[in-house]
Length: 187
Image (cartoon, rainbow, N blue to C red; front, side):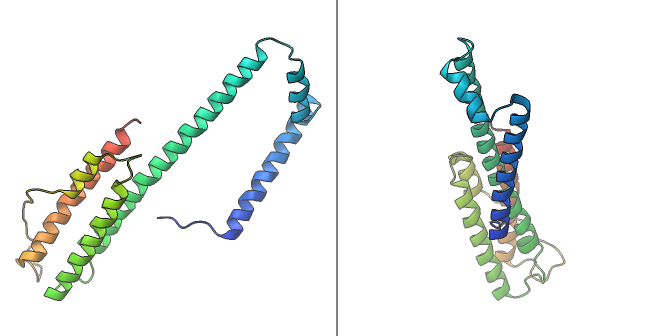
């Protein structure tokens, strides 16, 4: 996940927004000959047209609706991106762990890390604004897990290691399903 920006970035963003506001006000002043608030005060105290007030209201509502939709889409995409980043983390740190587990204690540590990763994903999938209960259950409850073994590995054939890798493989597939479903879903 991305860190929250620094204080300097926050201040810089605020200064940038103020500067943009000043440029837009100046641009409006050059075109209209008056400041925006003076223009609206003059036109709404005695509107030049009967239709101006409802049109401005509808345009305002459309702008509000558009910004809310963009905000929801942006948060939805961030939730999906967080899942994708956690999937990449698990591939790097669980599946392709370096060095690979070669003792029962290292297999136990892998199992602990795997369970912590599953709990983290499960907590992200609890966000009902973007994911359904079916998504969460699809990831959480595996049912039958086809077993496989990574040949040539020192722990190949170790029952717990093979089970962790098998569950990890199935969790990867299901998390990819959820990411795809969530991107296709219109809310």
